[in-house]
Image 1 (tube, one colour):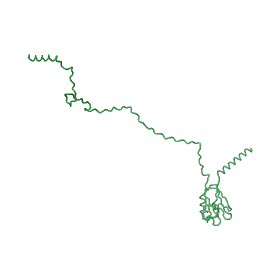
Image 2 (cartoon, rainbow, N blue to C red):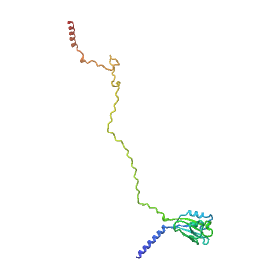
Image 3 (tube, rainbow, N blue to C red):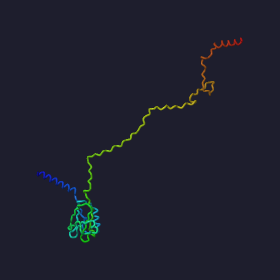
Image 4 (cartoon, rainbow, N blue to C red):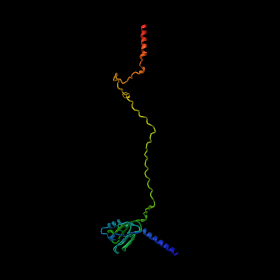
Length: 225
């Protein structure tokens, strides 16, 4: 039983430490080296200092002043402009003092001693709510991104070979001068005659023995009549 209580105590301590770590506060020294005093150059000194700071809920303003010479009063916006010192929201007269920023929005602080506020001892700050800022969504480390698909190559269409045999290309008909070669002229022929007359075949030459009796018979018949 004692061991269980000890474990619960350790767990609660760890939870509190974790909570404290997540809500770490920042302490802002008001005016830096000037502290909380009458500024030599008017209210612009504290306006310029506030513009360089980031205020969040839980942060602390440290007003460094001497007790009896100054004080810190938080007032409304309506009281801030004319430096109205009556009915402040809160007031601290001993210094140095720490003021915790418990609410977001615009906060107004003045010194109510004499005319210190009118001379420029006044401060306006804007406090942001850190809990309203959404935490970034963590990206899982083990998620492997899907690679992009490579671009699809467009296929090149090659025309299919033709199965039809093209008709043969007709050669131009030779001219009459090219059709028949010119034979060289034979003896006794005109050079312009392109036709060669072959010599008579020996088979058709008339035999003398066959022609002579017919000739004499013809002569004899002629004298008889």
